Image (cartoon, rainbow, N blue to C red; front, side, top):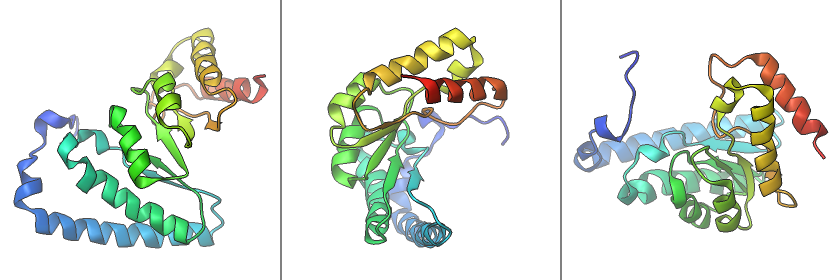
Length: 189
């Protein structure tokens, strides 16, 4: 299965309907394990929890409520009951980020690189926003990296924003470029 790229075209969405009972049981088990993990993170000294729903964008719009919003809401409510701030990252759901935020109500929301930062600022009002920059930018020369970082810093100037990528580093990313970006952000006025 190595090399298989998972996308909406090769997922059997009929299974969501046919195996509802099993899927709901699995989601309940995952939720209880995640709550235990969050609890352990809090005991270990975590100051904030981030919930990654990296495959949320693969769901059909009609399934977002049941298989993205509801499971995330349970975890957010658990975090809030534990009095720890929580950031959610429902990667790939596009403009449904606004509905996600209104429904799930996390303290912060991590945006992915396919979401326009201007749109995010206007439509996620009240949320602390994190991320957004495409990790592929780090494969370019330093000036283009800094220009892209400045774009995010300008859009979110005077707004609660945590600079970050809109998903993880690529394996071919040069660690020196990451270090230069971090230093650039730290010294940006």
